[in-house]
Image (cartoon, rainbow, N blue to C red; front, side):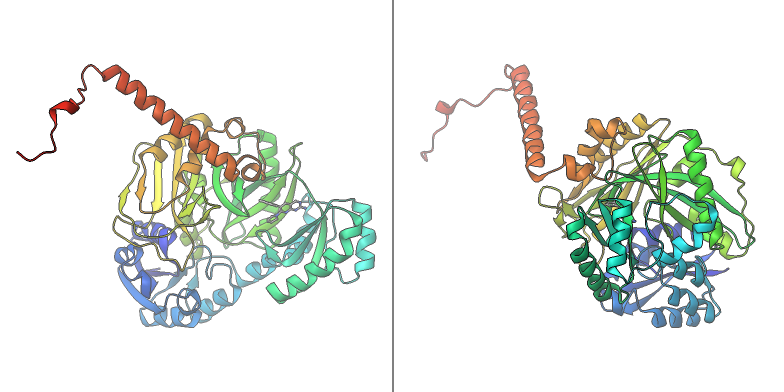
Length: 488
Ligand code: MV4
């Protein structure tokens, strides 16, 4: 591979290009009109404009991207995450154009894109799954009987959903039929596929996922887990690796289950197997994401492996260089997603001009970003502007470093989730690792955040007062009587 096109923007496009360059391969950037000055464009060896801001006209325009790739003699396309990364049609078109798609096969993407097909595929591998049905329900009366057997609360899921889209909780039997009807019609309008299924609702789970790598020769390894329970409305905010609660035995069992899931679909490339984990540390397979994930840096920090480099080597047909028994967890890593959103105002988007931008630095601090001071955050795309990650010998040291890195990170011009990061790092439930997917909902309300701000303001005022008291003999206030406003 001599030239790779990165079909993405922002921090992930830049991060992928860094590994490509390190490997001595040329890079091609694609961009939309408002991204003309973006760092991923400046960084690349070549760059082509795809069109207008709207993703459908630019970053989702498959044919245009492939046409440019052919014209420029590109021999590999990396899709990053989001956009075309889990689009089987795109993967197929890339390969049909004689270019290597740096990712799994279209078959694996399609299979794991359907939650029911995924369940069906893994069912012979003895993977723990939440009690429920593994086929689309078309007979609601029949489904009601099954729901009663499983017991309420029940969760209705759309097969074409995922990442929390198309889910409905049903608390009691009387609501079941109505909720099913709604879920089906919602699934039809949202995904064009009305297939839904039901599961026992695990009410306070943790979300723990396992990173896997598979090569084209049938070798698959796992790179341990990431804890992703600190999320808000299915948008992850903080991730860490390893999880603060798994025992070595559980870790091994989950890792082995993840490898089996990957084996079931002959997985090639980097992928992530999601699990729900309950209070007893029992785990259940949820779904598999067939892409490089946003939160991959924490895995890189604890394993020392460059996941993008491995993706490229796998795409080139190389055998995995890593053996399961050689993989060891080194220390602990934390990641905070920095969104241009205001945590004190319902996390509403808060984009604008970056008036001041100072990056945190230091040992064990990694910042994946793609903006500079003076730039504008475009409103058309994801509000995530950076990922701040820290690594230390222990979990508490990673937390301490994160607090310092947040304090050192200066972003002015709009609100960000940086102060929210401090709130989490200071929270006893987080420090003790005793939390679930409801952390943000349970502990962070608008009222509480206002109280918390007041508390911070009070602390700041007390500090200022103490400072003034200690210095009042040195700081001389001007004598008012010496001033005269009259012109002499
Ligand atoms: C569940 C669940 C509870 N019980 N399934 C949400 C995203 C999608 N991957 C599956 N999800 C869930 N499935 C059963 N049977 C709770 C969730 C869930 C969740 C999972 C992971 C991370 C955050 C979440 C937030 C709310 C609900």
